[in-house]
Image 1 (cartoon, helix red, strand yellow):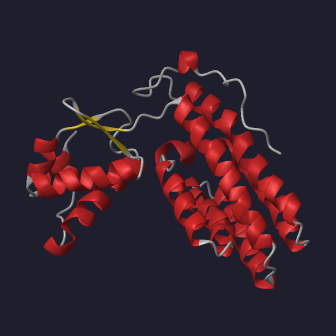
Image 2: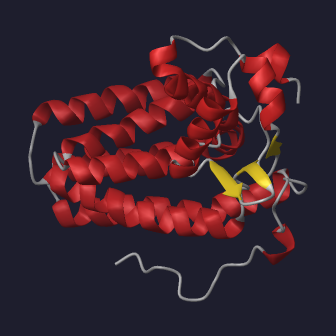
Length: 246
């Protein structure tokens, strides 16, 4: 890993830890540092021009965000993408985002569906241009509308942490290249349920959308990235007792 060529200079001392964490986070999310890879702290100290203390604090912050795993006496590692992590993360997100959709639906706002329509149209346009990085971010914007529309700060914060933990950007971009049509159709149905103020229906639709994507995402990663570090795809079978959609 050529940290010296990649990392930018860190900003003001008063926000040193946040700057280091943000810099590393971007590298992880965009796949420039690979899942399962060890973080060599001495190399990063030299690359970023910082001392050990703020770097350690930044790594602890990233561990709290689910991006880094610190193992005593072994070091810090980028959290590996494993089938179990994906399944557990998606299952919890499915129920939390379903709840957010229900709460938002219970607070009707005609302008909300207009925002959904604009985002969905953008997703279609970006898919047509094969700009799946931008598509990925607009897909996130769609979910953010009903997550923030729930007006539940605790729920918004918890989902935000989980969604950031799951932002393996480089892998998700490739995933959407192959699944954008199903994605757009699903989001079109979700908009219609919001338009009808169908709280039960929209909660189930959002929950099912995320749960249905779980196996597809695991299967896609297994087939496309069979040598992904830290992952034993040979054992990637669906566990018994997978969370019900209802």
